[in-house]
Length: 315
Image (tube, rainbow, N blue to C red; front, side, top):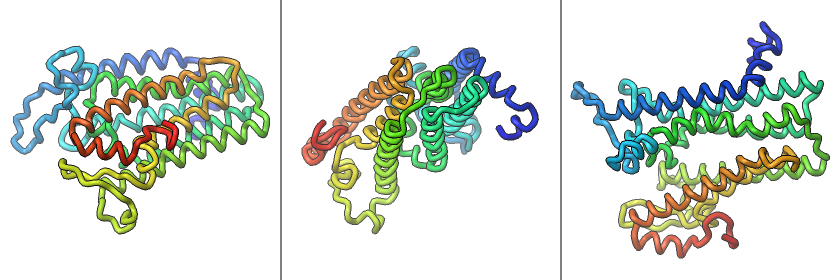
């Protein structure tokens, strides 16, 4: 981006900001075409004995072409033996695109009004740091439901490449043509909320990933867990003793803080927090059902030890 500015000035940034809808449409078309390719590609027959067999996703192998196309028939489609399409698309294109769009929209605000508002600064700091931190901890995505359970179909393809960069930038887009100047007290509260949400999200996910990777790690010996008949261990202390999906709570608080930075003049910028809440609740019940089937009575015992779903002592 610095090189583009050095050569062309603000012109390419303004072009991106002014063609936001056109770029969103192009990304949707591309991600849908990728979904068609992935569905057809999942029926391939390997002629190389050393090549791994196609692993189908349980939820995307229903026999209904439309449903399987939506959910993703193949779990982790690869090009060759190394390049994992789902793992690559899960974070990199969408999250990097999110940052690029944010920066272009901030430039648009600066060129239009002559300054950058503190609300835009909060949105850029929290969102861009979230992206940077997610890419730094990319390996931790390997234990998430998107990677371990869901196939790579239309849902994830459009979600990763189109939905994420163009709906997660609604706050910056709104501020690019409607500057919002926040009071120092309000801006501080919003920023502290974002830090709280981030810490809950990252620390809980880090603890879970460390335990799943090596439950015998001496650093985790203070954590209590239960053994299941499925030969896996379920944490019942630490972050995961507070609520069964405490990480979702932190993630949502972080997203809400970015919406609050835009003020209260429009509901459009709060679309993300509403959509994200629905997504997380839906994902929670999907995960609960899967675990109930997998663990049986052990899951009932686990729920009695960790009774709260999202908010400790409340819900």
